[in-house]
Every structure is written in structure tokens, then in C-alpha cells.
Amino acid sequence: METFLASMVSVAFHGVALGMILYVISVGLSVTMGLMGFANLAHGVFALAGGYILTTSISRFGVPFPLALALAFILVAAGSVVLERLLYSRLYNASDLEQVLFTIGLIFIAVAVARFIYGTLQQPVYLPDYLKGQFPLLGRDFPTYRVFIIVFSAVTVGLLWFGVERTHWGAMVRAAVDNRAMAQSVGINTRRLFTLTFALGSGLAGLGGALGAEIIAIQPTYPFENLVYFLVVVAVGGLGSLRGPFVAALLIGIADTSCKYWLPQYGAFPIYVATIAILLWRPAGLFGRHA
Amino acid sequence: MSAHAGGYSADPGVRRVEWLPWLVALAAFFLLPEYLSLGARILIYILYALSLDLIVGYAGIITLGHSAYFGLGAYVAGILAARVGITDPLVQLVAAGAAGALLGISTGAIILRTRALTLLMLTLAITSVLLEIANKATNLTGGADGLSGVVIAPVLGMFRFDIFGKTAYLYCLVVLLLGWWLVRKIIYSPFGTALTGLRENSLRMHAIGAPVYWRLVLVYTISATLAGVAGGLLTQTNQFVGLNVLSFESAGELLVMLILGGVGRLYGAFIGPLVYLIAQDLLAKQFPEYWYFGIGTMLVLVVMFARGGILGIVDGILGKLRTMR
Image (cartoon, rainbow over the protein chains, first blue to last red):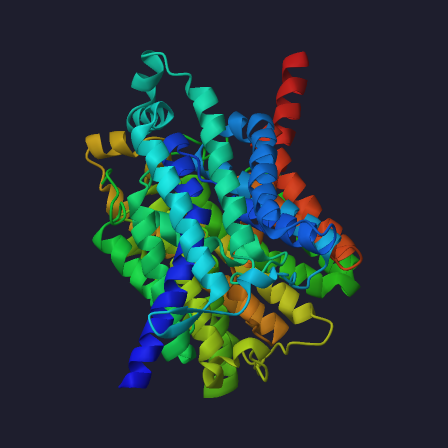
């Protein structure tokens, strides 16, 4: 019984860490899809870029870990603005099919570029000493880095929610998600709002990719392999919502970890079946507003 | 859409230019005997792309999971041949098609109640479930090592599958001809017109009293059947089934072929796989990195500048020539 309890605590802990990472990566996708109606399948590319920026800046340039995390956020956000202005913005009014094909094209390009620069091997993550080892908590030992992931993500999520719920910018974003035409007609510059929000969402994906580099392996096929997970978070959580994907990400993180721990012979099978069941029950996701 | 996007009003007679692909295919059989295995692969992918065009191009259902039906057909044919001992190719093909149809109607009936992202997600999830099953049920499917030992009896008891791929090529050509005939028939029927209507404005189709949901389920099932048959053909010509038939990359590649040829045009599904697979044969093995880079760039460019694909460009040029005259 004691060992079962111990493994329960451990699975829940690792599940929450994975869920936090999934949320930080996917929340931008939820906003992009809810705000701009853009089916951005290439969202994982931003996370991958963040991961590469972190690992490269630490191993090749000796950048300290916190600065490398900040770099992952800033560089990815800046890069995404360029992409949004040059490419994405031309397709806001295109059909879903065209957006899907365009973003699949971006994935192909990103995978090829990543393979060209880094090869097919997984990138090692060099953590600083203060994030290695175990962290004693309530009489148990937890891996320090996972504790850091959970705390850091929780603070980030708190800031994000504060920004969206309490600031002027957040009010504009919520207005535009609810009714873009109305928001525009009361004088909100939705195009600039889109660009800023897109940059923030992509930057968060970069941050999540960097933060989770140790959990979700940084390798060229990353955007393909994890696409299902990011989409599941958004679809199950509900488009354009902040809380929905959070609950969904935690559920998936915990479910995935428990499946791997207790039912390894079934792989990711239970997750997909559960996703299908949830989407049939609530097609707009658990917290989606549009049926 | 273009002039030959189909429709009840369009002339359903087979125009002379429509015989061209078949003449080219026959000519290739006699003139390029050393490329017949590539040729058979192209024919199979044309059938597969036709099935996708029916739902994406005509009915406007966006799917990332069409490989589910193709892969199921491939595995059904393979398992019948290697595990059950049913070696007759036509029986295998019928079984592959039936399996595709069964999965098509059961999944279609569920997922077509949803739209947009949810639909996309569900197609992806269904394929992932199948991939997971194929990966884990190793004593049936061979898992990651693939399913080998596929034995195929002569077609109709007369034509053996030879090592030069002559039988395979002609066999695929005949099956493709039947598939093309069926798809063409559908496109030029009132049902086909209804599908185009659904793609353009499903709300209005509801308003004029069309049974939207059942039309979608029907076309989805037909498409899944054709994809299953195409999968069965792939197993029979390769005499091997690998996990990649079910992968997301394979579904993505198929979409690339279709968009390259031109979506929602019957012959876009012919041109796309032809160009893509020949280019892949020439380039991909030497330069794998550049290959995917090229594919991605091409996709982006096609979406940005040439939404009708190769056939769209040809149409544009022909239209210009006509106005100049």
C-alpha cells in the first residue's frame, strides 16, 4: 500500500510537470486559433526552436541557464513576428485547408532545417548544479528540476492570466476573441493586437519547449511527433479559452504519465481513445463556448 | 472553381483529352519496362489521391487522417496473405475495400457530426489509435519490424506477379481505371453536385432541405473504401506492410501530392502523385534534407501563389491563350 501511494504521488508529480509544459507550449495555439481562427499546425516549430536556442546557447556559448530561458522566449517571439508579418497575415482569410497545408509546409521546412543544422540526434540539456539532484518536500524527495518546472510555469501562467483578465491589453484580446468585427468598430487595432498576441503565444511556446527540453526530447521530428498532444490540449480544452487548455493539459499530462507507468503495453492508446470520447461528448471541448 | 470542377450541368461525356492519361500509362508499360515498380506505385497513389480528392476537394472535409483507411486496407490484405493463408489477390482486395468501408462508415458517422478543428483532431486521433494498435499487436502485424511473408497467388489464377512488375503494373492500372470511372460517375451525378454545394455553403444546403450529414457520411465511406483498396494494392505489389502506411507523415505527403496537382479537379489527383513520386525517386535518396525542405517550400509557395496547383497553372495559361486569340 505504501509503495502504491508512493508511486501515485510520483506519477501525479511528474504528470503535473508534463502538463505544465504542455500548457505553456499550447496556450498560444489556443489563443491563435480562438482569436484569429488560424489553424496553426506549425506551433510545435516554435517550441522546437525554443529548445534548440536553450541547448545551443548553454552548450556552445556558455550562457547561464536563466538567461538561456529568457533568450528562448525573446528570440522565438521576435522570429514569429517576422513570420506573422511576412506569411501568416496573408492567410488570415484563406480557407482552413490552405492554412493547414501552409503550416504543414512550415513543419516540413523546419524539420529539414533542424536536421541540417543539428543532425537527427536528441540534444542534451546541461542543467546548472542548483537545479540538479533531489528536493526534499513533505518527507519525500522530488527531482529539483521538475519542482522548478512546476513553480516557474505556475508563475508564468499566473502572470498570463493576470495580463488577460486584468489589463487593458487583455480586455482588448478578450473583446476581439468574442467578436472581431465589433472590436474593430470600437477602434481596437486588431491587426496590431494579432501580431502582439501571436508573438506572445509563440514566445511562450519557445519558453515551454526550452523549459521542457529534458522531458520532451529536442530532435528534428518534434513538431510532427508532438503535434497530436498540442492539438489535443487545445481541442479538449476549448478554443480561445485560457482555463480550458490548462485543465486539459494537466489531465493529459497526468493521464500520459500514468499510462506509461501502469499500462506501458498500451502506449498512448488510452489517451487517444479518451480524447475521441471527450470530443464526441463535447465537440467544442470541455470549456469551449461555441458549440 | 474551374470549368471541370464537375456538377450536374457539366457534360458527363468523356472528352477526348481524358483518354490521355491512360494512353500515357500504356505507353509507359511498353517504353519504360525498368520503371514498372515505380509506375505501379504511382498508379496506387493516384487511386489514393482520388479518394482523398473526393472528400477534401469536392465535399470540403479536411482530414489529416486519411492514412487510417489506406493503412487498414494494407494491413487487412497483408494479414490475410501472411497469417490467414488467403492468397487470392481479388479476395484480398475486396476484403481491404470492405474493411476501409466499414471503418469509414463507423468513424465517419461519428466524426462528421463535428466541424473544423474538432474534426481535424478526430481524424488525427483515429489514425493515431490505429497506428498504436498496429505497433503493439506484434503477433498480428509484425509491429515496428513490419509484416513480411506476404504471399500473393496469380491474378484470376492466370497472371503471376513477376519480378519485373509487369503483372502488378497492369493489375493496378485496371483497378485504377475502375476507381476513376466510379469517382468520375459520382462527380458528374446530382450527388456530386450536392457535395460541391456542401463545400461551398453547407448552411444553404441545410436550408434547401438537403440531407447534409448523410451525404457527408456516404461520400466519406466511398472515399474510405477506395483508400482501403489502394492500401491493399500497395501490400500486393510490395509484398510487405510497414508501420509508415498509417503515419501522419504519409497522410501529409498525400495531401502534398493532391495540392500539388490541384484540389477539387479530378485530374489533379493524377498529376500530383506522378510529379511528386518521380521527383522523389530522382532526388530524395541523394538529398533527403533538401527533399523535405523543397517539399515544405513548395507547399508554402503553392498556397501563397498557385492555389489551383499544376492544373490550375495550366488552366490559367490556356485561358490567357484563348483570350489572346
